[in-house]
Length: 210
Image (cartoon, rainbow, N blue to C red; front, side, top):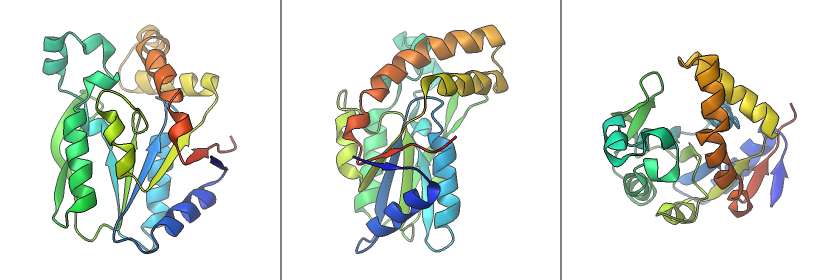
């Protein structure tokens, strides 16, 4: 596994992967708070300079709050079985193999609910950047994701920095300091342990200088 230490290196890998492909599927995985969304957004800004790129976040496939409550999984929100993995795989499959527009749900962090048809992958989108926690997971249906990707990356960040950033993010979206700490070191950390174990399946490890 190669390690990428700068945005320039990430861009170069993606641009090389586009050669000879109608559409390139790039997956950026990582634990909660690792910075994968920030890296994906920065990559998008660079790619838009010369390519038709679109960002496809996995967060839109969170199960609705009402469904999580009904299933008894609300207190584990963010775990692999609290997402619509079948819907996610169906969308990725359509994006990879069809030439029709594909609608993709988004996610509103303020209310923690998926938003239907929040974005569209159009036929001229030559690069699709997918970011999410479980792109490299190999159980519960998630094992179908990695084969759909042309490039797979895992964001590596020291745990103390990652948890600190995660607590801050939870506070920004309305949790009290105590609740933010409890969630970050509880459900989020249990998920992170599972996610970190999937890093070995990535083609590249992202380890940016802080």
